[in-house]
Image 1 (cartoon, rainbow, N blue to C red):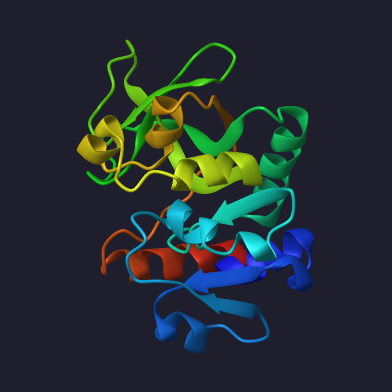
Image 2 (cartoon, helix red, strand yellow):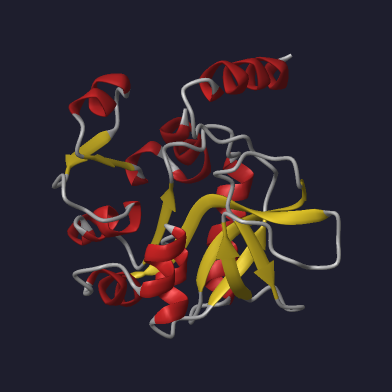
Length: 202
């Protein structure tokens, strides 16, 4: 589903499925697949392993985000073109405070620059939180810098949120508004997402 959505945005020939697990490749058909090492610290480190396959602008759509729409992938790409010095990350607004514990919340400046990200609630004087969506855009230089570290940076390690590494190494991150999604973080999420996708098709 994620690969199909990416193909709808930019064409099947521009999509590379990246994993260290052959079961992923068994589940996708008609896409270029590249197996990476099993010791990548994050998904972004994994993408950095295939830089030879990448164009100047790299869009990383995480595999646990089957509800991401092709239009939102294009929006993140367009934001990257407008803000070449930034890494771009998707964000959905007005997340209920009752959302899943694993959900990553983000604090942003007025201009949508990322200030911080956490799995804990971030005080903002509101009853809602902004939610990170698992889609990123970066260029090769930014990705090479990110992957040049042989360990996670302090806040990244504490929060287990890879986007924080960019902030900690001095790379600015701009959040791009996209549609809210329900990601697959737990096995029980699969049925929920399948039902939501079925409703979308009605």
